[in-house]
Image 1 (cartoon, helix red, strand yellow):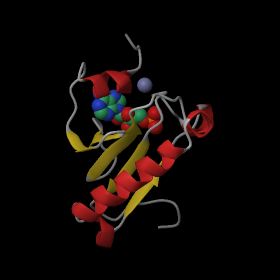
Image 2 (image 1 turned 120 degrees about the horizontal axis):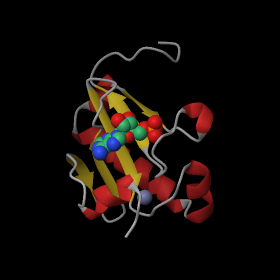
Image 3 (image 1 turned 60 degrees about the horizontal axis):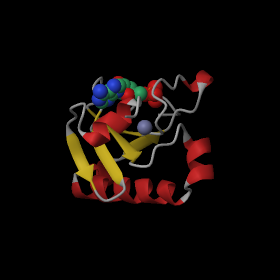
Length: 114
Ligand code: AMP
Ligand code: ZN
């Protein structure tokens, strides 16, 4: 059994509020939202971060971004806008080492020149 929190969410061992699922990607609500809408998109293939993901299965990056594109288009975020953030290792503050893409929106977002 995996010790990874997000693998446990994929397996259904830990509950989550799913917002998107296909064969290779899962999207769910972040438990501690940093914006009015805050989702996490992950590949079902375990990797630690984007460096690891690029080496193991670079196609999964495309799958995750296609899923985000589909989800945001179908849930009213395409026109209003959203931000995708991926933390990698210590200086970024990454705490969960299963690669995940934060999708933030639903209100004007501060920072990054906004
Ligand atoms: P990061 O700093 O990029 O590793 O972010 C990890 C994110 O996972 C944080 O935004 C947490 O709020 C979120 N998180 C941690 N545990 C859970 C959980 N059980 N369900 C949903 N989101 C979670
Ligand atoms: Zn994992």
